[in-house]
Image (cartoon, rainbow, N blue to C red; front, side, top):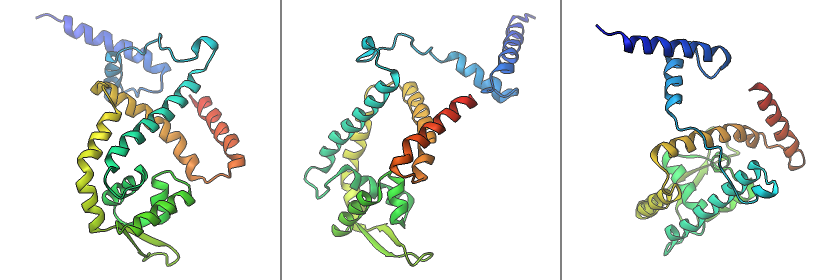
Length: 224
């Protein structure tokens, strides 16, 4: 009987134990070992990545921020086709409807925060949805000071009619990324979301926001 495979496995386990001693990303159990094995198979991050302005010293942070802004604007351009020949005015309107359909009735502020909007802008969107009969508001059963928003049959019909276009627009945004690239992009975007979302929920005044967010960034960096 040949034991070459077993010897290879023992060698891998030995290498993993050495790595896990200095890398807290891997727990010293089967789950950590499995994660480490998967990570070994991932394609290495390219060290030759380049971006506009790199020759003049432009930082990767600047490039990331600009590219994210551009991607959001591309998505809005595609959304115009979704809204063509409908009473929809903005991309945010059908996103609000999708959230109400998916998560059910919620307060105005809960709906606004779920979409990462400020209160004035979110209220304008909700007003337009009510005016068109796509949502209805009623007193909250838990807080009489609040209004609960729910999608109407008319709103559901609108979504159903436009859903094919909505799915197409969504698919186009991720373009020709490979399946594994999409998963990696989701992981990275979720990491960014995990950092920024609690800061957004804190409702910090604008004049203090940058300082607070930067302090949080420094604290997160130190913990690594």
